Image (cartoon, rainbow, N blue to C red; front, side, top):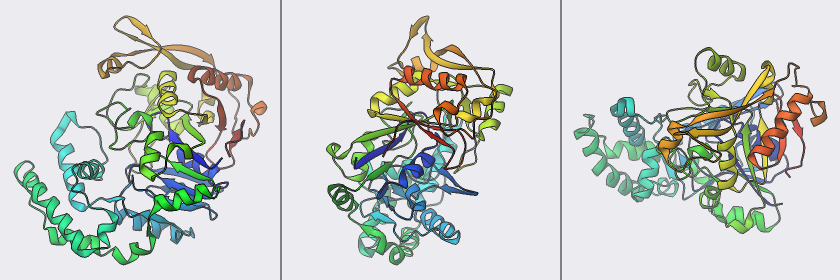
Length: 427
């Protein structure tokens, strides 16, 4: 079972960090293949809680090699700040490898990101302002700065000057911001060159060699299926492919190397930022679920929007990712409810549908159709076998499994690494 992809099935924040960390004890290589420091994972080990942003969750497992793949965009300020913070807590980051082809987030793209969001006003997308989108746009426009450029001063200077020739005109004439000095940006990035150099390799070659040796490689997604640039709720999405296909292009491996695709699913639903969310809860109901789940962004601290489980969303994610297994997280959060609604269909313009609408307006107009399931009042955080759960909790899990058409192989019943029920082994 050498190649395993782990993806989110909703709008992110499903607990992929914990799922990856649990699998990471059994794997040899953990690859982050998309996104940047615009999303985070929280991993709890014993009494210690770790917030990861750019670093793959595998950095917490001393037996695994953490890899930042070519599909990631890297803020070098954020990367080395995160490494320093982790090493100050005794976490060894010396095994980290970074693709020479990964793109760098220059400071001018952070300026452009924030200026764009501000100008959009009420129509803003809800980005984190960390320069992720402009950097992916540079990649597509072939004016990006890559990790390998930082190690070559002449190439770096050419790239930065070329990019700023156009961007300074936009900053000055559209946003009223003073132009940015290209040489200052060049020197900012060059300051990291020597520290970066030992980490930079052909990660595609490294990963494929590991797979060919029969080692277990785990591919870790940032964000989630409904934020995927192609398959998510466009335009309220991230700027990369957060689905399983993104693992192949973002790491440089072929589909024949993948044996299992694991989707991480929260027992309810959350999202951050703007965009449609049919099962969203508002007012006291939303605040209650938010507080129960501790639903605040790892990277931004923003309150997450919260709602009931949407079976249409997760079934869709199962299809576009080709899921073989689901890891269900935060089941314990629902222990406070006498009844738990599950969205099993939408009504759109008077018609009942059981698959996601193919047009965005249909998704915006969707009214959820709920099936009510009995809740449970017991504390389930100590459960370690499926049979330890109250009957109503077992029924809830089996109902979701039937709705999303994919087996639920693991159930999270608490924050810690140990608070997990394994129904089917993933490794």
